[in-house]
Image (cartoon, rainbow, N blue to C red; front, side, top):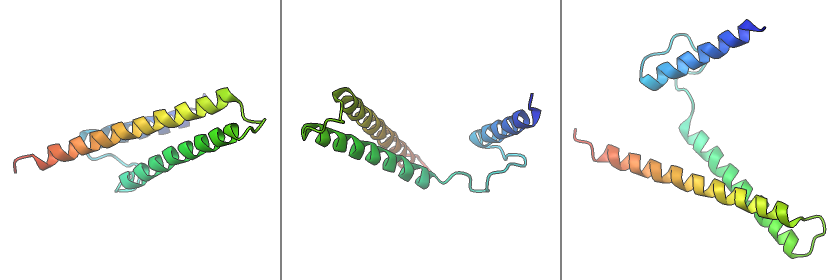
Length: 107
């Protein structure tokens, strides 16, 4: 059993929990700034865009009569793109709601 890997995972979980509660983390391997939220958001948007482009391409190939395109694969890709887009819309709604909450706070 690899106890070193378990210890590393526990340390990571502890530092993440400390950051979430606002306490300073003990020695952690992450930079002082942590994860760049803007970069994570941009990567998520790019993934949604790629899923939509892939689904649209598959649908266009199927409509053009491409024999390699299966209807069920096209429908699954379209549904995955739709679900990922709806998820991104919900994230946007939560961000806007949080922004309004912060802006309406009394100082």
